[in-house]
Length: 500
Ligand code: F6P
Figure 1 (cartoon, protein in one colour):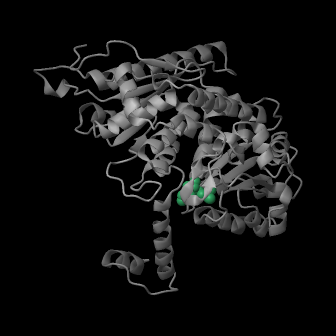
Figure 2 (cartoon, rainbow, N blue to C red):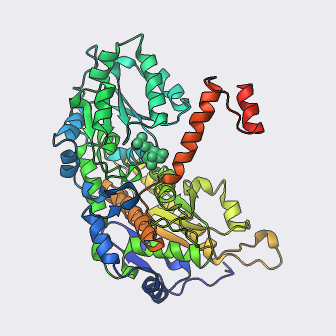
């Protein structure tokens, strides 16, 4: 290798019980990171972290506290569900095949209807942790996720499920999101030839929401309603009852381990004062440095383990809906940019798609590589396990190679086609194994990174006022498309409406 830029002088690693961060390819020493932390972190940072941990941090604009960190134990998840043991009871009944549909057949398919935080977290977790399913499940449940307001996903799911053996989770914190209600409305039409609405509601629906009244008004029997606190933000809600599909996939014990992993990261975040030894704080500061000092406006999330393939989409909501803001929490305009654009994809496949641009294109970027060093691959023959472990090593070697090349570049003075520019700062987040524990720790680390950056920028990371206007505007356009009104918008919009 003939690097264009200097390789790091030492390996810079921060270790925690379940997750490690290597920031050697960020171009900052530990001393520089420390100095930057002193400049940027507010004096009361420790207090703010403690407030968040106790569920006392204020979401001022929405007039409530922020309580997702209180959900890091199954006990609290159950307690939030009206004090009744519905969450674990429902999980047990469904996973054991004892939940019968209206015609007496056991439920075989579960369809989670939700969007945003009521979809991305449960979908990511269910997919990532599938192999850890407790085998006390005598019965196989297929889980499907439907979020898109156009019904495109229902198109694919409805033909492969049977109304008599399918249960729908209506997952919506507000129970008022049009995307979810539109999907539910189509499902109600679909069941009509097979079940009455009452049969469907009594045997085939579970509601998960912070809005109990709306679930009752919809007709969901109380025993099939699981609530969670209004103070849990949608994008921070996979730890709450919204995580039901994860628990249905792996069982309550494994779900509980995911919460324990998040709790271990919470303790690391709250108790480690030295920012150069605190993974979420260091992630936040490194991100801030790239945003403010290097004017890099985007972060690619690049998991090198296929089980984490939904992580980039999850991270988009977690980070961009939280920190894409132009005003402080006191409603003062900001003069410097806040959260970057988050994008990415499964790293190894990205190598055959967008990495060309990353290595030789013109744009600045930073990236988080996420690697899993070992794989157990239970449930396969020894030969298949060996082959799968080889594949894991192959993936990690590619991860390390591209990360190195992205920073160091490659010199090829007489052959510009083979010149790699490099100098792209990246993180490597790695775990020894992907387990419910380490998965929980990884996601909690990112939550705390987002919180820390929000605190430094002085913004409220727990509201999302910018997503409302579009919804209102869509209502007006829909009224005109449906012919209930005859508003004129602009020549382009009007022409499409006319054509419809
Ligand atoms: O429109 C944005 C949003 O409010 C997200 O913050 C949220 O995760 C999503 O919609 C879904 O909301 P709900 O769970 O209330 O249906």
